[in-house]
Amino acid sequence: AAATPQSDDSLLPVVRRCAACGVPWSEEVPLQVCSRCREVYYCSRDCQGRDWRKGHSKTCAYVRSKKSLKAFQSHMADGLKRRQERFDDLHPPKEDFEKEEEEATVPPPHQQRQRQQRQRQHQQEEAEEDLLPV
Figure 1 (cartoon, rainbow, N blue to C red):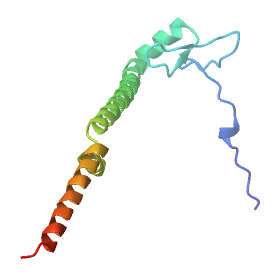
Figure 2: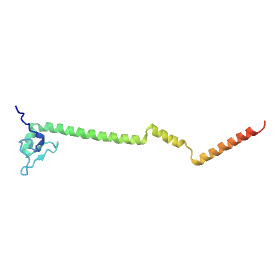
Figure 3: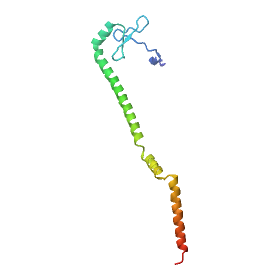
Figure 4: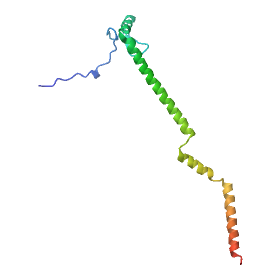
């Protein structure tokens, strides 16, 4: 028995249809989208009212709340990301802070020269003391 080829619906073009009567979109019958959920289409106000009474009022609110929830979650995630970036800017990681601290403890060049001169002078004085007879 030969296998019959199965049709692949994913290759068919998507045709919008009226949610109440099933009329497909065409230039003669342009469909209007539901202004609340933006998920279903209607060919007329009569079809919209009929579908609303038949149950779209409940699904529309559900779809809208889901979209609102996704938008809210996205907004909160963006806000958390921005706050984390600001926190990171104000509080650098420990190793960066230690590097900055090390750099801050190195004296400026003129103080380094003065310190080297004092050290040399101190070494010369010690050397002279070693040469003095006891």
